Length: 306
Image (cartoon, rainbow, N blue to C red; front, side, top):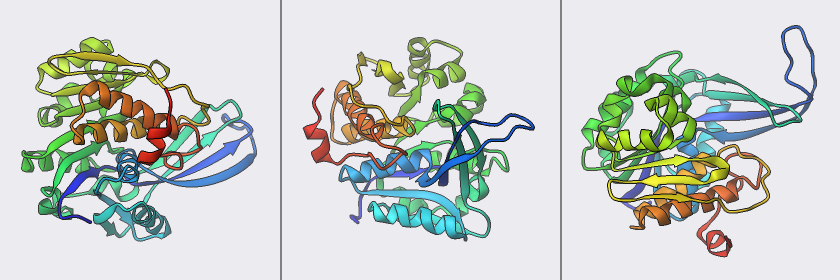
């Protein structure tokens, strides 16, 4: 690992258990399990793994429990070449997401944040974070505690020379702009989806993006699913179409997109080129089950045709 880290992620670390079922039972109903698969996950963690696959030096800040799930989560980051110096092992349960998926692809999620919600500033080596060019943030559940959310806000103020990207996710977006004010004002790049922009700003995605630019964000990216993405800064705006591929599972597509977009920024690409890279990386992810198995290398990207 180089002394300089290209990107460090800060967000939840969860072990995802994907449980395929014949149906998602309602109260007093029964169903049966068809298969169970386990994947390491967490939004920012998926993005960091994607960046590592593209050849960047990456690191991570997070917390796992002193259990088997925590060991699995750490080993999965090490396997992908991610520096784990910022991951703390704590007494308690690691984060766990149970995803019940029926034959139609409909999902029901149950999430146990475990120790994810209890990261304090004392858990973080600020000098470690100051080694990076980019800090990429994603949200926490904030059910057991808002400590990790508060720590993110403080950390952002402490590293004002580092570029910060932020994917709020639905839970943070539902908090609204007022509660996220301290995060938004220190954010350089927002990477969100259409629904989250609506929740966050109360506006459609173009007007919502402009509002965020007016609040000092440099770049706003809106992920539009099958409609591609919208990227804008104070000078230009672009709507960029998707790549046509065989879709197997869209889980983690947004995190994969983030990896491609941030890779482009680090390589000094303009926002249109970054959007194309984001769509490219996401197109690989959705061709396999899970958030990480389909993440491409640089060689894969070169071989993809539009």
